[in-house]
Image (cartoon, rainbow, N blue to C red; front, side, top):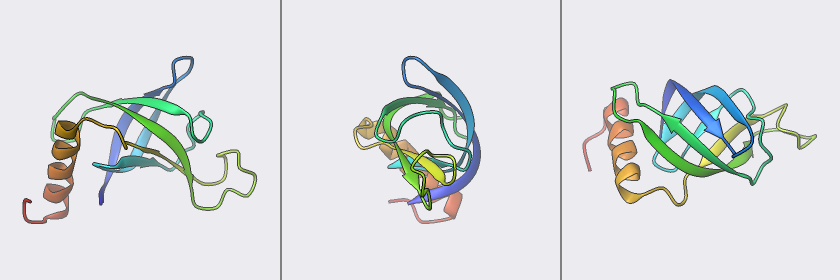
Amino acid sequence: MTAPCALPVEARDGNRRAYRLALAIGAEGASFETPLPFEPGSLVDLRFRLPDGQGPFEVRGRAELLGDDAEGDGEHGCMAVSFPEAPRATKELLGQYVRMRLGLTPA
């Protein structure tokens, strides 16, 4: 589950750095409308603060394509970074933020 946002994020893969707005964020990852300059499947380090001021969060994830991207170059579809190995405490804080943002009952 993700919550919509316009969240500034710094993304790095060791050699390159990019700054983008995340359109949605949750405990499992973040999605971006503007492509990130990383190959799908590559490991990416994200750094961000939540709109409520929590953070900074530093999470390692995996870049992936979302939606139509017939050319497979990340230029035509949305991109996401999944957080399969994020620390449990980070996932819990992101999950709490999503529930609050969506007006859901705390878990």
